Length: 55
Image 1 (cartoon, helix red, strand yellow):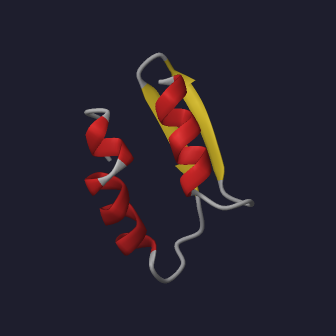
Image 2 (spheres, helix red, strand yellow; image 1 turned 90 degrees about the vertical axis):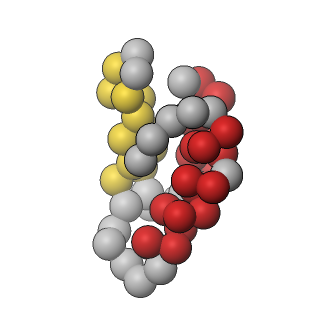
Image 3 (tube, helix red, strand yellow; image 1 turned 45 degrees about the horizontal axis):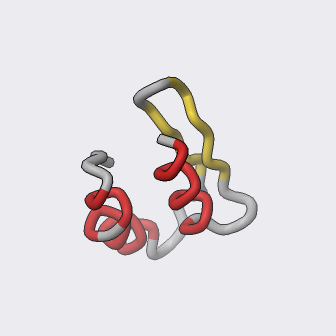
């Protein structure tokens, strides 16, 4: 979870919050701006998928 949190922190920009909610859950608070779906797809294919996590 620490590694995944770090990766998500690198992926999201300043002003978007990444927080660990528990032993098995991480949350990201980000504005629903244009391109968010593409960014989430990139995450699914990259870091998140490599760690076996789901969005």
